[in-house]
Amino acid sequence: MKPVFMKNIPILFMSLTLCSCAVHAPEEAFTPKLDSSYSVGAHMEYGDSAADLVLTRHSTGAWNAAFSAPSALAGVCLTFDGNAVSASYQGLQFTVPKSAMPAKTMLLAVTEVLDTAAGTDAVQCTVQEDGTYRSAGTCEAGAYTLTFDAAGVIAEMEMPDQPMKIKFTEYRVTGESLTTEPAASTGITADTSVSSTAETTTASTTTSK
Image (cartoon, rainbow, N blue to C red; front, side, top):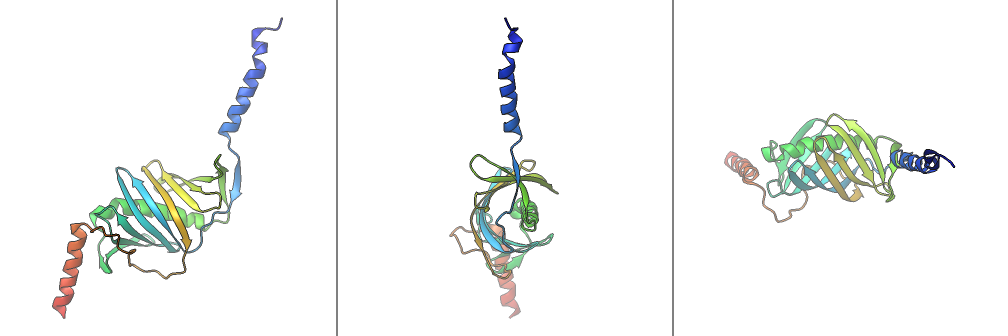
């Protein structure tokens, strides 16, 4: 009669094989669909906050983020030019409001990662069970993962250390030049700090005339 431990060897071997397959997902070189200029809708959750915006890439380091939510940021457009960030509301320029500072910090990290991905011919990705592709890396803000759908279009980004998560939708290629105009109004009123700034700028212009 075989010892009990000898009978269990085939079961143990199969278990180790299955675990090994689960842990070491296959990697392959993957070319994401990220054009030199594009826009994409984004729902961003960061810390205890959330925002909806249209993120537009014009070239490396040149981006616009036009917010439609929350109400404190609706109508505000942040313009990124390298590490410099400016803000506008209904075409009027002003300093970045406090309500937009956390979102600005997150978007600096997001645009850095997306610029890197757009400038890479092939990204090492793991193929997920649902057919999506996931890539992992690090940037100045910490570790991140990018998820692309089966067609190569950007779908999600996560930065657990922040924490921050973005879901991307409605990716489209653009050939537009850089503009500071935000997206069309959603009917949500901007916060009083933004409105007051815009009114002050308008009053100053009228007085100078």
